[in-house]
Length: 79
Image (cartoon, rainbow, N blue to C red; front, side, top):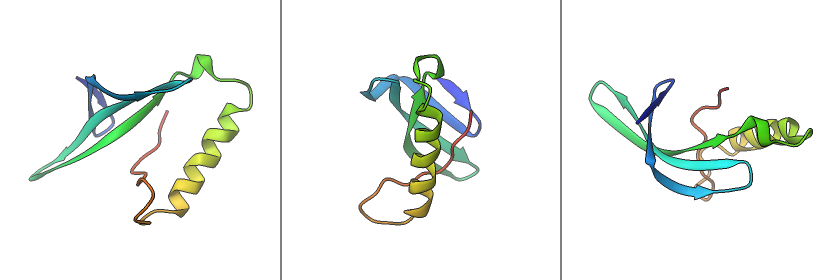
């Protein structure tokens, strides 16, 4: 179990892997509810030079598509 900001990451539940990192099951617990989700953790030391720009672009696009029924919802992005 890993704590990141207000999220609890279950490091034993890998949902997927890619070139630059992994996606883990996670949960956000506040008072009387628990929100389940997935967290993409990217290993910065593996990234090519232009990857920061690509990640920033992905975050902006996901923020613009917030609430679309066919797109995953971005809750938070942090380093």
